Amino acid sequence: MQDRLDKLAHRLNEMAAIAGSVIVAGDGTVLTDTIEGNAEGEGAVAVFVGNAAQQIGEAFALGPFDWGLVTMTRYRMLIMQQPDFFVGLLLAEKSSPALVSAQVEETLALLH
Amino acid sequence: MEEILKDITAVVGVTGCFVCDSEGRILASDMPHLFDDALLSSVGQTATQTMAGLAAARRRKVGELDLLYPEGRVVVKNLRDGCLCILCVRNINVPLLNLAAKAAVRKLTAAMKE
Image 1 (cartoon, rainbow over the protein chains, first blue to last red):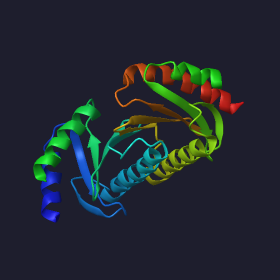
Image 2 (image 1 turned 90 degrees about the vertical axis):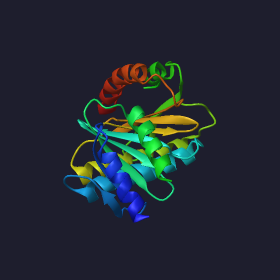
Image 3 (image 1 turned 60 degrees about the horizontal axis):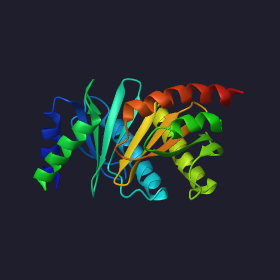
Image 4 (image 1 turned 180 degrees about the horizontal axis):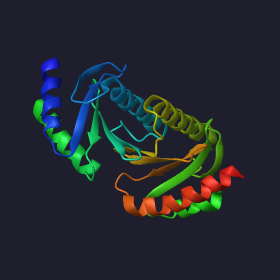
């Protein structure tokens, strides 16, 4: 599993639209990252938002959380739900969350 | 505040929206009746607590959350003393929604200060 996650993190890091990635378990444990700086802090963002998104989706009966975007001034993190972890992606300026999530889904499918 | 919310609900693809304070108490709502206040309040509380937690952890104010699901989308806008939650279809016209929401956020923030 760790090899798969490391491979995923490196593939994500190669995408121009992504400035860094963190893969974090539901309890906040960082499994792997390509973050320059505080990986635990970025992982916490992914987990906070991912867990909240699950709760909100259940309340509104919208189905399982797919992906989400948190924006804090110029900071944007795309969070994607996977069965065993969350993927947190720091987006480069002017990158499209919808396009990035589609590309990442393709990458995740290839690694399964 | 309900009149302000109607401008958002008028956008094609929006199911409804509501405003809550920082405790999750519903201040105004334009949502279908099948969503009662208790449910909306729990969603509001989750959203406001998440934004507060992120602000404390990252020392940055959260502008918005945009959450996608197979059956819809939830957009949460920070109102400083609460939040605006918008329930819509997954493939909503985001620029159009943001245009309507931007004006509404300004008016709602002012209304909440009164």
